Length: 324
Image (cartoon, rainbow, N blue to C red; front, top):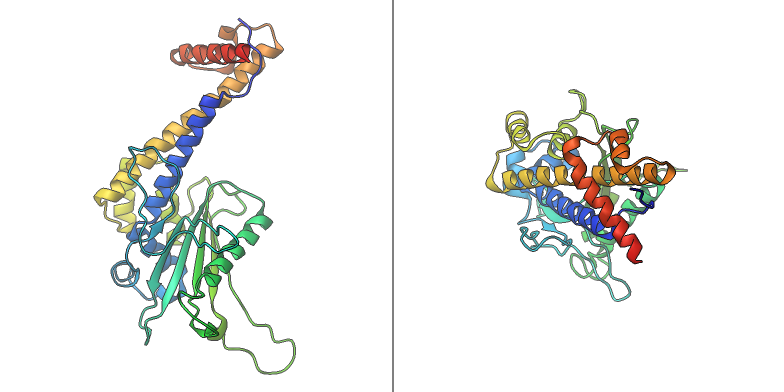
């Protein structure tokens, strides 16, 4: 039986897209857990270096973090939408849809000073220059959006500092296990009167790069925590034990639920992507040779117990192509 080479079917593409959307939504919900955010702030924000994770979680993070809406199955738990709106809208444009947005109080500040915290998950490597420009744009939007909400008129001194934290997965090995900070600095070209950093310390872009391999023990704790939390290689049960034992993160019902969901979705997504690769390989072999489908599956190394499924998928593809 020979088949024309065709792209993965629309149904398969939609299924993969749906799984990816559900997986991304689950990751956002997991990252928006206050104990995870508290560990994140403890690991990267200067204001919280001397604070305990418990105090950051219970005293300083305000309310429930807002999580952006993405298309999910109707039977899935919907994302939390409270506090800050995750979309800043203006008359001339739609604004940015943030992954996670929250406020957190600065410890021991005389007057209550708040920070605006934006957390973004970046799962696919993209043009690094474009990513850098995007992080600056997001910070700028978060500052501009404070006009009329946080400060009015010309009272720019009331602008709240913005942390824009980017958790970048699947990074090349040379960039993995790295935390970079991008923030304003003062360069005095001439003279002897530098500006006070407290007057312009209004944003900090934090890029956390995660690789595919387990980070070394000497890596910062927040990198090791995120690698475990977002891993597709560690089972849900083992992940829960590591988080409790190594990072003192209790397995609450909501965290345990999201970890189980994420692991199940990750496994399903990996299987779906592998299936698409195999289908393309089989189509290519059959189109370029006189091999039968059975011979092509043998050549591709598809396990015997999975071959009936691939045979049915190939038949469906062929029938769809013939109807066009």
